[in-house]
Length: 73
Image (cartoon, rainbow, N blue to C red; front, side, top):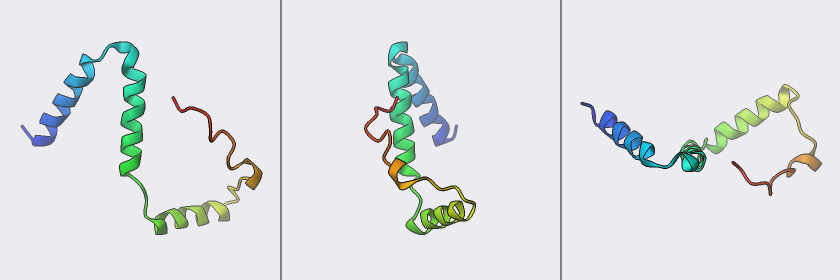
């Protein structure tokens, strides 16, 4: 059995041990952790932003911080 399969099985077993009411929080924590690992390089981020700007995918500066203080679920 591959080492990744062993870890996957252990992670699933741990997840199944949690009461169901905690699963949304565990899911949020897992997503945040994954997102923190997948940060793009500055060059990649700039390139993506430049392409979006060229396609007209713009937001008014006044709305950029809208919802920043809202809790994520």
